[in-house]
Length: 150
Image (cartoon, rainbow, N blue to C red; front, side, top):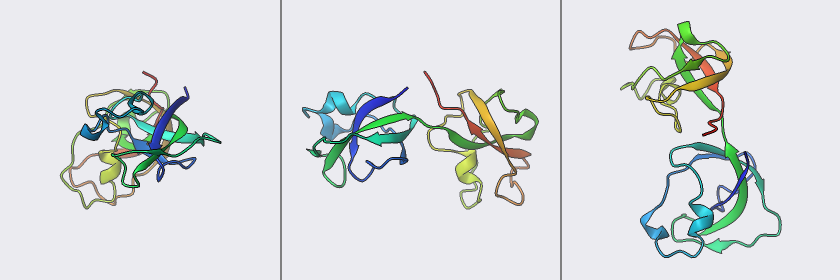
């Protein structure tokens, strides 16, 4: 489902993905807050279109001090899951935190926009993870989760 929202002009490019962080203290009193604060906090989104003919608006939150109107949709999330549960269409959760931040799979084991206590439906099985050996002895497969709909 497409939603119109305001994002920082640096993010206002079709295909850009981001995780919505929710309201910042600088949002208080902003006349555009209803247009910005209409997403689900912690969810990953993808910009599907930049609204033509819209103006750039001042913003105290974004580094470039301005926002633009865009259309966004919930985005898919790539993640590592237990190989024994890695089947397209199945519901799974993440294996849990990993302290090995230098591992090439770390961003897949703890993907932004996904929570350890949530269930996700697998859209596709992508194959072997980028690491040679899991330091936690987990047998993992890289998958893509369907976008969240709720």
